Image (cartoon, rainbow, N blue to C red):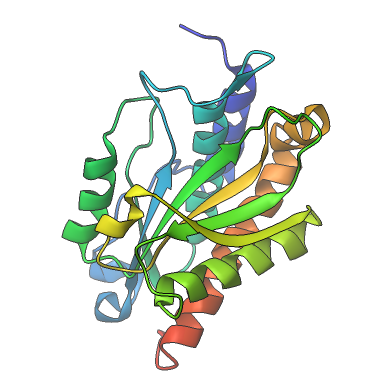
Length: 225
């Protein structure tokens, strides 16, 4: 078992922020407000289990992705307008097909995969957001990605690497879907930031704000106030 003490600390902090609940896999009870007006958002922590993702200086990408996901969940739990679900909440293997199917079966309004970047060019830094190359240039996925990218770059002051399309599994999603690369583990300075609890929290809150901004833009009637 790999000792990932920094991830454990991140989960504990997320649990405190969430009022003691580390995970939320759908708040469907009427006690949470107006369930008929809630929007389901499915979050995905990239890699996991037999697929650790990029590894630099003993840091596993799958762990970083999961730590940030827990923080996003903790932030979103307090919003009565949203119902957040996750494709994985532990270090387990989940196929790409199953990740998307989770969102499709849930009737999600949005799907977002949280991942960390890496490059042979160790000086590479910054945030970028990806969409499937099979969606049209005016598709909602592009709008979601652009809003999300702007929110995270503004909050973190990270280099803005923009939004682009790529051959991704996201084309299977029946809702707007994006993948955000929150920083480069291959860069020593940026890796240190991605392991920092405060920086992870900045990313989490920015992702939440980006999701809200897009939902407000896509559906002006979206409100449960």
